Image (cartoon, rainbow, N blue to C red; front, side):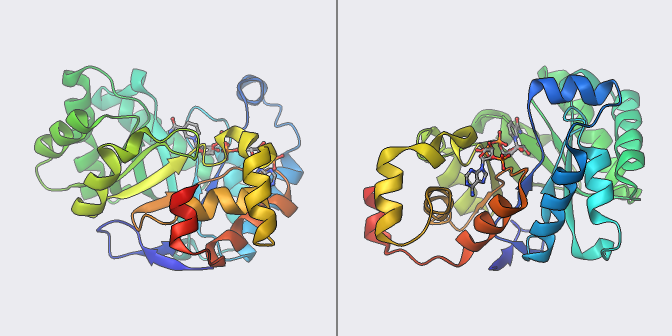
Length: 269
Ligand SMILES: NC(=O)c1ccc[n+]([C@@H]2O[C@H](COP(=O)([O-])OP(=O)(O)OC[C@H]3O[C@@H](n4cnc5c(N)ncnc54)[C@H](OP(=O)(O)O)[C@@H]3O)[C@@H](O)[C@H]2O)c1
């Protein structure tokens, strides 16, 4: 596993993280208290930790925070970089603190490393949430602040709103089939030293079955998931967060961090 500084935080994390969004049906059943295939999902997260991954991404929406709690049991908390997210209906100060408190309880931790606004709300509610998040940083409940699914204008506005902190990370979709962030967000993150957490790095699994990706990956003796991940890692600001609910998948994904493929080939893809 390769490690690198996560944005401007001074914290070194694995260059690949683990996502924990399963599917909409899983979210509904989790709300009803039924965590389907929980054992295997926890085993997968543990396999990732053993393989050197230390970023775990979740959200109050996903219903997966209790699984993350089980997976990190027995590990030194400081060695793990946990990120969770607040849903846009909870951006008012009191609601945000309630959401955060519940996330911490479900995760069984006193703090999260990164707290992100999951989707932008109105300008006013984003501002209220960001100022509340600064207070949460001051009280030690979160270490760093991030944004998910914001465009460049929204990111710049958020950075202006913050008084004592800065945005250390954004989390947006990026993969071989969805290259929009290359227009503005990625160059911005590289320049400003902001960590770009790439979600859907495998296009929700599609890339693992893509014939062209398969063809190139065979040439390098790797599997398509690894090619899709190493392709993302050509940007120093990018931290892909693939989700894998099977231990064998997580182990393969973790190995992608050490794959070397000539830059010209990655650019051609
Ligand atoms: N901020 C946001 O709005 C947002 C939105 C969506 C997602 N996310 C985050 O991003 C994470 C990743 O997105 P995602 O889970 O939707 O999609 P993804 O990581 O692009 O793809 C997940 C799919 O790829 C499969 N897979 C993983 N490794 C594989 C391997 N080595 N070989 C073959 N198949 C493999 C998984 O199978 P198995 O599960 O069967 O192992 C799963 O079906 C989420 O879990 C979540 O944390 C954030």
